[in-house]
Length: 169
Image 1: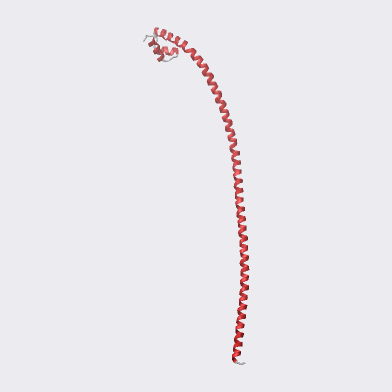
Image 2 (image 1 turned 120 degrees about the horizontal axis):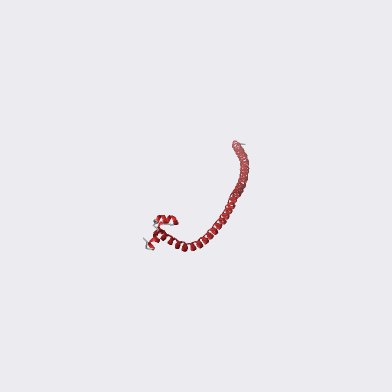
């Protein structure tokens, strides 16, 4: 064998050894990459699960908030109704009592007006005529206008008017 053959065989052996080492390194690298891929897949699955759980919890939180708000609103409405409704009822009762009182007072005023209109329509003609005669009679006796007004319980202006109409003044 010649040296050339040995060198070629040595070189072939060296290439074979390098090829085997590269192949071993490549298989180690492939194994590591496969492990990394599985780890990344597991992390992605866990991430997906966590996102779903967060969404579920977020929805549950929103539902709880809505339920709590509805409960609070209902409780507030109930408390308001408990405190306001008796007041409204009392106010309506008071309005009813006031309406009855107002109706009674209106009826009283109507009756008083009827009586007074009858009395007034009856009195002035007779009282006025008798007052005129009394004024003239007392003035003729020498009483002053003020004294006549005081005696008859009428105004001085009325005494003065009657005297002027009778041409006594």
